[in-house]
Length: 428
Image (cartoon, rainbow, N blue to C red; front, side, top):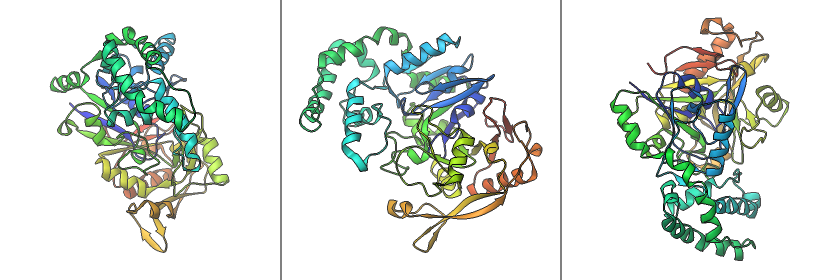
Protein backbone atom coordinates (compact mmCIF):
# COMPACT_ATOMS: atom_id res chain seq x y z
CA UNK A 1 0.00 0.00 0.00
CA UNK A 2 1.42 3.41 -0.92
CA UNK A 3 2.98 6.30 0.87
CA UNK A 4 2.21 9.29 -1.35
CA UNK A 5 3.67 12.79 -1.19
CA UNK A 6 1.53 15.67 -2.49
CA UNK A 7 3.29 18.99 -3.01
CA UNK A 8 3.14 22.21 -4.97
CA UNK A 9 5.13 22.38 -8.19
CA UNK A 10 5.15 26.19 -8.52
CA UNK A 11 5.17 28.99 -5.89
CA UNK A 12 2.16 27.74 -3.95
CA UNK A 13 -1.62 28.13 -4.14
CA UNK A 14 -1.84 25.40 -6.78
CA UNK A 15 -4.75 23.59 -5.12
CA UNK A 16 -2.90 21.09 -2.94
CA UNK A 17 -5.71 21.13 -0.40
CA UNK A 18 -8.28 19.95 -2.91
CA UNK A 19 -5.95 17.26 -4.27
CA UNK A 20 -5.26 15.99 -0.76
CA UNK A 21 -8.92 16.12 0.17
CA UNK A 22 -9.91 14.08 -2.90
CA UNK A 23 -7.51 11.32 -1.84
CA UNK A 24 -8.63 11.56 1.77
CA UNK A 25 -11.36 8.94 1.53
CA UNK A 26 -8.79 6.40 0.34
CA UNK A 27 -6.02 6.96 2.87
CA UNK A 28 -5.67 6.34 6.59
CA UNK A 29 -3.34 9.19 7.53
CA UNK A 30 -2.72 12.68 6.13
CA UNK A 31 0.51 14.26 7.36
CA UNK A 32 1.55 17.90 7.14
CA UNK A 33 5.34 17.80 7.18
CA UNK A 34 6.54 21.40 6.87
CA UNK A 35 5.58 25.03 7.28
CA UNK A 36 3.20 26.66 9.71
CA UNK A 37 0.12 28.84 9.42
CA UNK A 38 1.77 30.97 6.73
CA UNK A 39 0.10 28.99 3.96
CA UNK A 40 -3.52 28.12 3.36
CA UNK A 41 -5.58 25.49 1.61
CA UNK A 42 -9.13 26.05 0.40
CA UNK A 43 -11.35 22.98 0.10
CA UNK A 44 -14.93 23.13 -1.20
CA UNK A 45 -17.24 20.31 -0.05
CA UNK A 46 -20.91 20.29 -1.09
CA UNK A 47 -20.71 24.00 -1.82
CA UNK A 48 -19.19 24.78 1.60
CA UNK A 49 -15.77 26.41 1.66
CA UNK A 50 -13.19 25.44 4.26
CA UNK A 51 -10.02 27.51 4.63
CA UNK A 52 -7.24 25.67 6.45
CA UNK A 53 -3.94 27.22 7.48
CA UNK A 54 -2.12 25.01 9.97
CA UNK A 55 -4.21 21.84 9.94
CA UNK A 56 -3.72 19.06 7.36
CA UNK A 57 -6.47 18.89 4.75
CA UNK A 58 -7.20 15.32 5.80
CA UNK A 59 -8.96 16.62 8.89
CA UNK A 60 -12.04 17.11 6.68
CA UNK A 61 -12.19 13.42 5.71
CA UNK A 62 -14.09 11.14 8.11
CA UNK A 63 -12.01 8.25 9.43
CA UNK A 64 -8.68 9.79 8.43
CA UNK A 65 -6.06 10.49 11.10
CA UNK A 66 -4.59 13.96 10.47
CA UNK A 67 -1.01 14.43 11.67
CA UNK A 68 1.10 17.53 12.29
CA UNK A 69 4.64 16.27 11.80
CA UNK A 70 7.88 17.25 13.48
CA UNK A 71 8.85 19.49 10.53
CA UNK A 72 5.96 21.88 11.20
CA UNK A 73 6.11 24.96 13.43
CA UNK A 74 2.96 25.27 15.53
CA UNK A 75 1.26 28.39 16.83
CA UNK A 76 -1.00 26.93 19.55
CA UNK A 77 -3.42 29.86 19.38
CA UNK A 78 -3.97 29.33 15.66
CA UNK A 79 -4.23 25.56 16.13
CA UNK A 80 -7.08 25.87 18.60
CA UNK A 81 -8.81 28.63 16.65
CA UNK A 82 -8.93 26.36 13.60
CA UNK A 83 -10.07 23.36 15.63
CA UNK A 84 -12.82 25.37 17.31
CA UNK A 85 -14.02 26.72 13.94
CA UNK A 86 -14.24 23.21 12.48
CA UNK A 87 -15.91 21.81 15.60
CA UNK A 88 -18.55 24.53 15.30
CA UNK A 89 -19.29 23.36 11.76
CA UNK A 90 -19.68 19.74 12.82
CA UNK A 91 -16.28 18.45 11.66
CA UNK A 92 -14.81 15.71 13.86
CA UNK A 93 -11.33 16.87 14.90
CA UNK A 94 -10.75 14.32 17.66
CA UNK A 95 -8.29 12.19 15.69
CA UNK A 96 -5.63 14.90 15.28
CA UNK A 97 -2.09 13.91 16.29
CA UNK A 98 0.74 16.39 16.90
CA UNK A 99 4.43 15.50 16.95
CA UNK A 100 6.10 16.02 20.31
CA UNK A 101 9.16 17.23 18.37
CA UNK A 102 7.38 19.96 16.37
CA UNK A 103 8.59 23.44 17.25
CA UNK A 104 6.40 26.12 18.82
CA UNK A 105 5.81 29.61 17.43
CA UNK A 106 5.94 31.90 20.46
CA UNK A 107 4.62 35.49 20.51
CA UNK A 108 8.18 36.82 20.35
CA UNK A 109 8.68 35.09 17.00
CA UNK A 110 5.82 37.13 15.53
CA UNK A 111 7.24 40.33 17.00
CA UNK A 112 10.68 39.67 15.54
CA UNK A 113 9.16 38.72 12.18
CA UNK A 114 7.22 41.96 11.83
CA UNK A 115 9.90 44.39 13.03
CA UNK A 116 12.59 42.70 10.93
CA UNK A 117 10.51 42.89 7.77
CA UNK A 118 9.85 46.57 8.32
CA UNK A 119 13.52 47.16 9.03
CA UNK A 120 14.53 45.53 5.72
CA UNK A 121 12.47 48.05 3.74
CA UNK A 122 13.06 47.51 0.00
CA UNK A 123 15.00 44.34 0.77
CA UNK A 124 12.04 42.72 2.51
CA UNK A 125 11.27 39.08 1.81
CA UNK A 126 7.48 39.42 1.83
CA UNK A 127 6.77 37.23 4.87
CA UNK A 128 3.30 36.88 6.36
CA UNK A 129 4.51 38.21 9.73
CA UNK A 130 3.28 35.10 11.53
CA UNK A 131 6.62 34.17 13.10
CA UNK A 132 7.39 31.17 10.93
CA UNK A 133 10.88 32.23 9.82
CA UNK A 134 12.08 33.24 13.31
CA UNK A 135 10.73 29.97 14.75
CA UNK A 136 12.69 27.96 12.18
CA UNK A 137 15.75 30.14 12.82
CA UNK A 138 15.55 29.26 16.52
CA UNK A 139 15.23 25.60 15.57
CA UNK A 140 18.43 25.70 13.53
CA UNK A 141 20.18 27.84 16.17
CA UNK A 142 19.18 25.21 18.76
CA UNK A 143 17.32 27.65 20.97
CA UNK A 144 13.83 26.58 19.91
CA UNK A 145 10.91 25.51 22.05
CA UNK A 146 9.29 22.21 21.13
CA UNK A 147 5.77 20.94 21.82
CA UNK A 148 7.07 18.51 24.45
CA UNK A 149 8.61 21.41 26.40
CA UNK A 150 5.16 22.75 27.24
CA UNK A 151 4.72 19.85 29.66
CA UNK A 152 7.72 20.73 31.84
CA UNK A 153 7.54 24.28 33.22
CA UNK A 154 11.18 24.38 34.32
CA UNK A 155 12.53 23.28 30.97
CA UNK A 156 10.14 25.63 29.18
CA UNK A 157 11.34 28.59 31.25
CA UNK A 158 14.98 27.73 30.58
CA UNK A 159 14.41 27.48 26.84
CA UNK A 160 12.39 30.66 26.60
CA UNK A 161 15.06 32.51 28.58
CA UNK A 162 17.77 31.21 26.24
CA UNK A 163 15.78 32.25 23.19
CA UNK A 164 14.92 35.71 24.50
CA UNK A 165 18.41 36.60 25.69
CA UNK A 166 19.63 37.78 22.28
CA UNK A 167 16.22 38.82 20.96
CA UNK A 168 15.67 41.34 23.72
CA UNK A 169 18.98 43.02 22.92
CA UNK A 170 17.82 43.33 19.31
CA UNK A 171 14.40 44.63 20.25
CA UNK A 172 15.81 47.23 22.63
CA UNK A 173 18.96 48.40 20.87
CA UNK A 174 18.20 47.92 17.17
CA UNK A 175 14.43 48.09 16.78
CA UNK A 176 13.65 50.39 19.73
CA UNK A 177 10.95 48.06 21.07
CA UNK A 178 10.27 46.93 24.62
CA UNK A 179 11.85 43.77 25.97
CA UNK A 180 9.71 40.65 26.31
CA UNK A 181 9.73 38.94 29.69
CA UNK A 182 10.31 35.24 30.20
CA UNK A 183 7.44 35.08 32.68
CA UNK A 184 4.75 36.46 30.35
CA UNK A 185 5.86 34.13 27.54
CA UNK A 186 5.94 31.02 29.76
CA UNK A 187 2.52 31.85 31.17
CA UNK A 188 1.13 32.30 27.66
CA UNK A 189 2.51 29.00 26.37
CA UNK A 190 1.54 26.99 29.46
CA UNK A 191 -2.07 28.05 28.96
CA UNK A 192 -2.25 25.70 25.98
CA UNK A 193 -0.49 22.69 27.51
CA UNK A 194 -3.38 20.71 28.95
CA UNK A 195 -5.59 20.98 25.89
CA UNK A 196 -2.67 20.05 23.66
CA UNK A 197 -1.47 17.09 25.75
CA UNK A 198 -3.92 14.40 24.49
CA UNK A 199 -2.94 15.11 20.87
CA UNK A 200 0.81 14.81 21.35
CA UNK A 201 2.66 11.62 20.52
CA UNK A 202 5.66 10.14 18.73
CA UNK A 203 4.14 10.63 15.29
CA UNK A 204 7.19 9.17 13.48
CA UNK A 205 6.65 5.87 15.31
CA UNK A 206 2.92 6.00 14.60
CA UNK A 207 3.47 6.55 10.87
CA UNK A 208 6.12 3.88 10.46
CA UNK A 209 3.89 1.36 12.23
CA UNK A 210 1.00 2.37 9.97
CA UNK A 211 3.13 1.72 6.88
CA UNK A 212 4.27 -1.60 8.33
CA UNK A 213 0.61 -2.55 8.65
CA UNK A 214 -0.07 -1.73 4.99
CA UNK A 215 -2.02 1.45 5.61
CA UNK A 216 -2.14 4.36 3.16
CA UNK A 217 -0.30 7.50 4.26
CA UNK A 218 -0.47 10.83 2.44
CA UNK A 219 2.20 13.46 3.07
CA UNK A 220 1.06 17.02 2.42
CA UNK A 221 3.50 19.88 1.81
CA UNK A 222 2.77 23.24 3.39
CA UNK A 223 4.19 25.41 0.59
CA UNK A 224 5.69 24.59 -2.81
CA UNK A 225 8.86 23.71 -4.70
CA UNK A 226 9.85 27.24 -5.71
CA UNK A 227 9.55 28.36 -2.08
CA UNK A 228 11.73 25.56 -0.71
CA UNK A 229 14.59 26.95 1.39
CA UNK A 230 17.18 24.94 -0.61
CA UNK A 231 15.66 24.62 -4.06
CA UNK A 232 13.43 27.68 -4.37
CA UNK A 233 14.11 31.25 -5.50
CA UNK A 234 16.29 32.03 -2.49
CA UNK A 235 16.14 34.31 -0.51
CA UNK A 236 12.49 34.85 -1.50
CA UNK A 237 11.47 31.51 -0.05
CA UNK A 238 9.93 29.98 3.03
CA UNK A 239 12.07 28.69 5.90
CA UNK A 240 11.45 24.96 5.52
CA UNK A 241 11.76 22.06 3.08
CA UNK A 242 8.64 21.99 0.93
CA UNK A 243 10.01 19.46 -1.59
CA UNK A 244 9.71 15.68 -1.52
CA UNK A 245 12.81 15.27 0.62
CA UNK A 246 11.13 17.35 3.31
CA UNK A 247 8.44 14.70 3.63
CA UNK A 248 11.05 12.37 5.11
CA UNK A 249 12.82 14.80 7.43
CA UNK A 250 9.56 16.48 8.43
CA UNK A 251 7.73 13.29 9.38
CA UNK A 252 10.37 10.75 10.39
CA UNK A 253 9.84 8.18 7.64
CA UNK A 254 12.65 6.94 5.39
CA UNK A 255 12.90 7.76 1.66
CA UNK A 256 12.58 4.10 0.66
CA UNK A 257 9.03 4.09 2.03
CA UNK A 258 7.70 6.67 -0.45
CA UNK A 259 5.88 5.14 -3.43
CA UNK A 260 4.60 8.16 -5.36
CA UNK A 261 5.30 11.88 -5.53
CA UNK A 262 2.44 13.96 -6.89
CA UNK A 263 3.05 17.54 -7.98
CA UNK A 264 0.07 19.90 -8.03
CA UNK A 265 0.42 22.57 -10.71
CA UNK A 266 -1.86 25.32 -11.96
CA UNK A 267 -2.78 25.67 -15.65
CA UNK A 268 -1.16 29.10 -15.32
CA UNK A 269 1.20 30.46 -12.64
CA UNK A 270 0.78 32.60 -9.53
CA UNK A 271 3.03 33.90 -6.80
CA UNK A 272 2.56 35.78 -3.51
CA UNK A 273 5.27 37.94 -2.00
CA UNK A 274 8.52 39.28 -3.35
CA UNK A 275 10.99 37.67 -5.76
CA UNK A 276 11.53 36.95 -9.46
CA UNK A 277 8.64 35.66 -11.57
CA UNK A 278 9.51 35.41 -15.31
CA UNK A 279 5.98 34.99 -16.70
CA UNK A 280 4.34 37.62 -14.49
CA UNK A 281 1.72 39.74 -16.26
CA UNK A 282 1.43 43.34 -15.16
CA UNK A 283 -1.35 44.05 -17.62
CA UNK A 284 -5.00 43.34 -18.37
CA UNK A 285 -4.28 39.63 -18.89
CA UNK A 286 -2.79 39.40 -15.40
CA UNK A 287 -5.78 41.17 -13.88
CA UNK A 288 -8.14 38.91 -15.85
CA UNK A 289 -6.41 35.79 -14.49
CA UNK A 290 -6.54 37.21 -10.96
CA UNK A 291 -10.26 37.97 -11.09
CA UNK A 292 -11.34 34.90 -13.05
CA UNK A 293 -9.26 32.55 -10.93
CA UNK A 294 -10.06 34.23 -7.60
CA UNK A 295 -6.36 34.69 -6.96
CA UNK A 296 -6.27 36.12 -3.46
CA UNK A 297 -4.35 34.54 -0.59
CA UNK A 298 -6.29 32.19 1.72
CA UNK A 299 -4.20 33.19 4.73
CA UNK A 300 -3.39 36.84 3.98
CA UNK A 301 -6.03 37.95 1.47
CA UNK A 302 -3.21 39.47 -0.59
CA UNK A 303 -3.76 39.59 -4.38
CA UNK A 304 -1.57 37.02 -6.07
CA UNK A 305 0.78 37.91 -8.89
CA UNK A 306 -0.37 36.09 -12.03
CA UNK A 307 1.32 34.83 -15.20
CA UNK A 308 1.18 32.18 -17.89
CA UNK A 309 2.20 28.55 -17.43
CA UNK A 310 5.95 28.12 -17.07
CA UNK A 311 7.17 24.77 -18.43
CA UNK A 312 10.74 25.51 -17.31
CA UNK A 313 9.56 25.66 -13.69
CA UNK A 314 7.49 22.51 -14.24
CA UNK A 315 10.51 20.57 -15.54
CA UNK A 316 12.59 21.81 -12.63
CA UNK A 317 9.97 20.75 -10.08
CA UNK A 318 9.67 17.37 -11.73
CA UNK A 319 13.40 16.81 -11.49
CA UNK A 320 13.92 18.14 -7.95
CA UNK A 321 11.04 16.13 -6.50
CA UNK A 322 11.22 13.02 -8.65
CA UNK A 323 7.56 13.55 -9.60
CA UNK A 324 5.60 10.52 -10.73
CA UNK A 325 2.38 12.44 -11.46
CA UNK A 326 0.99 15.93 -12.00
CA UNK A 327 -2.41 17.20 -10.94
CA UNK A 328 -3.25 20.11 -13.26
CA UNK A 329 -5.66 22.53 -11.57
CA UNK A 330 -7.84 25.45 -12.67
CA UNK A 331 -7.94 24.52 -16.34
CA UNK A 332 -11.43 26.06 -16.43
CA UNK A 333 -10.00 29.53 -15.70
CA UNK A 334 -8.42 29.62 -19.18
CA UNK A 335 -11.73 29.13 -20.98
CA UNK A 336 -12.49 31.95 -23.41
CA UNK A 337 -8.96 32.74 -24.59
CA UNK A 338 -8.30 32.68 -28.33
CA UNK A 339 -4.65 31.78 -27.75
CA UNK A 340 -3.03 30.49 -24.55
CA UNK A 341 0.66 31.39 -24.16
CA UNK A 342 2.99 28.85 -22.53
CA UNK A 343 6.56 29.67 -21.51
CA UNK A 344 8.80 26.97 -23.02
CA UNK A 345 12.20 28.55 -22.34
CA UNK A 346 13.93 31.70 -21.09
CA UNK A 347 16.00 34.23 -22.95
CA UNK A 348 18.86 35.61 -20.82
CA UNK A 349 20.97 38.20 -22.64
CA UNK A 350 20.40 36.46 -25.97
CA UNK A 351 21.03 32.92 -24.68
CA UNK A 352 18.15 30.44 -24.67
CA UNK A 353 17.67 28.44 -21.44
CA UNK A 354 15.35 25.45 -21.48
CA UNK A 355 16.29 24.60 -17.89
CA UNK A 356 16.54 26.82 -14.81
CA UNK A 357 19.51 29.20 -15.06
CA UNK A 358 22.29 28.40 -12.62
CA UNK A 359 22.48 31.87 -11.08
CA UNK A 360 19.79 33.90 -9.35
CA UNK A 361 20.75 36.98 -11.32
CA UNK A 362 20.12 35.21 -14.64
CA UNK A 363 16.76 33.94 -13.40
CA UNK A 364 15.83 37.43 -12.24
CA UNK A 365 16.56 38.82 -15.72
CA UNK A 366 15.03 35.92 -17.67
CA UNK A 367 12.57 36.83 -20.42
CA UNK A 368 10.00 34.12 -21.22
CA UNK A 369 9.97 32.50 -24.65
CA UNK A 370 6.35 31.68 -25.48
CA UNK A 371 4.52 29.20 -27.64
CA UNK A 372 0.87 30.08 -28.29
CA UNK A 373 -1.63 27.22 -28.17
CA UNK A 374 -5.18 27.39 -29.47
CA UNK A 375 -7.79 28.18 -26.84
CA UNK A 376 -11.36 27.03 -26.29
CA UNK A 377 -14.68 28.69 -25.48
CA UNK A 378 -16.78 25.78 -24.24
CA UNK A 379 -17.70 25.51 -20.53
CA UNK A 380 -15.65 22.60 -19.18
CA UNK A 381 -16.85 22.65 -15.55
CA UNK A 382 -19.09 19.60 -16.05
CA UNK A 383 -16.47 17.53 -17.88
CA UNK A 384 -15.60 14.35 -16.00
CA UNK A 385 -13.55 12.44 -18.57
CA UNK A 386 -10.64 13.59 -20.69
CA UNK A 387 -12.69 12.93 -23.81
CA UNK A 388 -15.37 15.33 -22.54
CA UNK A 389 -12.94 18.24 -22.87
CA UNK A 390 -12.97 20.34 -26.05
CA UNK A 391 -10.24 19.21 -28.50
CA UNK A 392 -8.14 22.34 -27.92
CA UNK A 393 -8.31 21.87 -24.15
CA UNK A 394 -7.15 18.28 -24.62
CA UNK A 395 -4.28 19.48 -26.80
CA UNK A 396 -3.32 22.05 -24.16
CA UNK A 397 -3.12 19.38 -21.45
CA UNK A 398 -1.11 17.00 -23.64
CA UNK A 399 1.29 19.80 -24.60
CA UNK A 400 1.90 20.68 -20.94
CA UNK A 401 2.41 17.01 -20.14
CA UNK A 402 5.09 16.68 -22.82
CA UNK A 403 6.80 19.96 -21.91
CA UNK A 404 6.79 19.21 -18.20
CA UNK A 405 8.18 15.70 -18.42
CA UNK A 406 5.59 14.14 -16.11
CA UNK A 407 2.23 12.58 -16.87
CA UNK A 408 -0.89 14.59 -16.00
CA UNK A 409 -2.95 12.18 -13.93
CA UNK A 410 -5.78 14.47 -12.86
CA UNK A 411 -7.27 17.74 -14.14
CA UNK A 412 -9.23 20.27 -12.10
CA UNK A 413 -12.13 21.90 -13.94
CA UNK A 414 -13.77 23.74 -11.05
CA UNK A 415 -13.48 24.39 -7.30
CA UNK A 416 -15.80 21.61 -6.11
CA UNK A 417 -14.54 18.30 -4.73
CA UNK A 418 -16.06 16.41 -7.69
CA UNK A 419 -14.93 18.85 -10.42
CA UNK A 420 -11.97 16.71 -11.42
CA UNK A 421 -11.05 14.52 -14.37
CA UNK A 422 -9.08 11.42 -13.36
CA UNK A 423 -6.73 10.00 -16.02
CA UNK A 424 -4.58 7.76 -13.80
CA UNK A 425 -5.02 6.41 -10.29
CA UNK A 426 -2.80 8.45 -7.94
CA UNK A 427 -2.76 5.64 -5.40
CA UNK A 428 -2.49 2.80 -7.91
